[in-house]
Image (cartoon, rainbow, N blue to C red; front, side, top):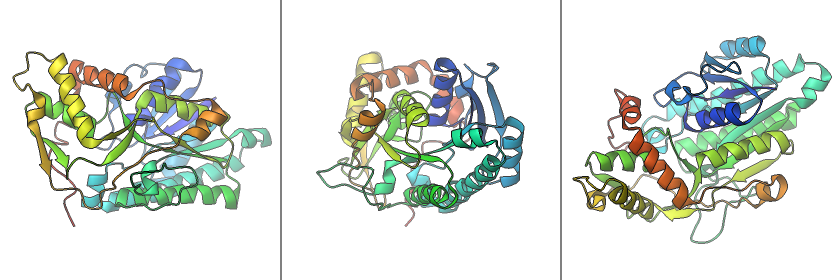
Length: 351
């Protein structure tokens, strides 16, 4: 079986591809246009595998996409390509609309037309798996969890663009009969994440003795999901999920942002005993909050656990320690990843 994975050079996409090649018999075609956050070095371990192929294509280019489908003839699509950083969406929403909305539309249409050319049995087996975010649901109060029935209430240009893409995917299922699956995940973390997100930015900044910016009072809550656990969940949904259904994927690991940052500081104090920046917690700096900052995300993952037998293997403590240890062992990768792309500056202050 051959899978076409969009955004495979990104953080979650590369973790998925590494898992697919290492742990399954699938062949993979990685479609990625290599934006600032796309990095083929994350796939060095599989780059020479005969079951892996890379196509540098932007999903906003429908003709190029169609050519990829014609050459590789995939049996399923796993769609992860997206602009994904909330702060960047505040500064420049246009790229998010183009990639996340128009790009998804292109991929749906190319997939629909391609599927129509297949023999009947292959049409029945074809799948379009759309990978999305819990941010489409908006903000929770102190109680409650996001379920698959939670109404959409996106707050940022990023989450709005992902909500739009979710609706497009469901519409292509209901109108055209495209066999789709949708997953909405909580905050991912782990190795190879571009150091603009909270956890890798905190690790790399602390190691360099730079301030650790915490938005507002740091009380905002996120549910954290180790990226390899997410990869396993995505494969479970692709293989055993019910067509037309949505599955929420969460790590059952709610933490306030300030707690996450302080935990990283404690781990660095322990693991880098000779650091001149110890105690690293002294680097924490509270900064102006993000515009429209959602207070709390938390996922009820009961459906995927009940129906597909998936549950996370990593606790937040075990996954975070693995993550910190990986960044400590791969400082050169981090430096190269951000070189001429991101200097750790604050984004998302435009109103």
